[in-house]
Length: 276
Ligand code: NCC
Image (cartoon, rainbow, N blue to C red; front, side, top):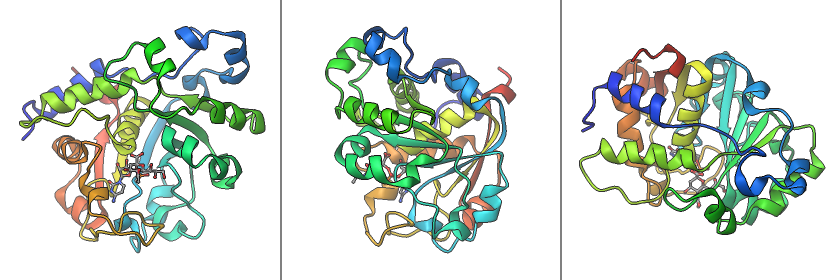
């Protein structure tokens, strides 16, 4: 039901969604205290240019997929929140280049976040559901979850690990494009970590293969591949506009429907490869 052609949609995403990390120059983060905590290296310096990338959703349908080798064959792998690799290598691989976590996890599950070795691999990025197109000072005063102290504690414990804060303007630039390309009104909640991660990787990589964001024939009500918990909303969405995200991604898929059905795999071009 998307209105724009796939080519035009890719150009809109490339030109209107600014994927940046919080830096010293960003208003309230310009203090001498924050200077000690924000990573010294810029995000683009820390990642560099990536070729083939994999985005691994946390969906239950990854269970028994045996996609591990295929996922690990990529130059970089993005994972979400508390999604583990240990014990699940055959299905999800073992490489983690970037892990995108939400501010709820960093705040509400702070003890696990600070102690679980799972988080110590790769580059970490945290995002927070900021108010719609909020100015940075307004968001800083009223984040959805007040994750700043936990972020600092993690940085003190792991000063060598790159750990960035996603600039929240990105999620609403992306939401606007989701809304413009949907026939219905979308609830004004930010896109899921999955959708944010897909667009993030499109800015970094030449090609992005996304696994089990569009469900394969293994589709299940089991929420995560690493838990026994059932909830239909995990795949279809409740708070996040997941269904709209999935329609948009389906519309841009450059791979085959067969790949979606058998592997749960969608192939998207990196923005560097997009000609507008
Ligand atoms: O579940 P979650 O997401 O960590 O999953 C990461 C991304 O994978 C895609 N996904 C997941 C399950 C599924 N069956 N189908 C999918 O397509 C989605 O794109 C999802 O974004 C989040 O987006 O950050 C979310 O986080 C959890 C939770 O906060 C974290 O796991 C930390 O514990 C949210 N769950 C709850 O708040 C209960 C979830 O709504 C969104």
